[in-house]
Structures are given as structure tokens and as C-alpha cells.
Amino acid sequence: MTKNTVSFDQAIEQLEEIVRQLEQGDVPLEDAISLYKKGMELSTVCHEKLHHAEKQLISIMDDSGEKVPFDAIENEDASR
Image (cartoon, rainbow, N blue to C red):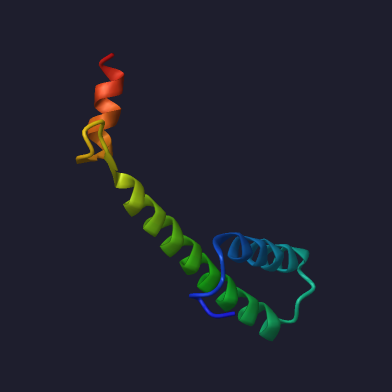
């Protein structure tokens, strides 16, 4: 699977498996290095997907259909 085709859930599952293997401590050094590199790639994939989701949530539509910053809605709700 390439970075673009792996889902967030798949990346997290693979990352958890890598962490489990590394925590066991019985992985040969060369394999541990490969697992670490793969884990870093998966971590980057997860970060990028979360960042993309955050960008989508930063602006939302108000009651009149206008895009407004997410913080503005949050502040409006807090003042009620």
C-alpha cells in the first residue's frame, strides 16, 4: 500500500503492530530499523490525514450559508 491508498485506520493499525513488535524486544537490529522507518512513514501519513481533516473543519457554514471560521462559532456558543 502506498501513502495515498492507506486509510487512517489502516495506518494506525499497522503502527500499533510495529510498536507491539518493537516493544517485545526480540526483533533483530536490521528488522527493528526497517520497522522504525515504516513506523515513521505511517506516523507521517496519520499526521497528514489529521491535518487535512482539521483544515476541513476550520471553516463551517453559518445559518445563512456563509463560511465562517470555526473559532467564531465556538465563541458565539460560549457567549450564550
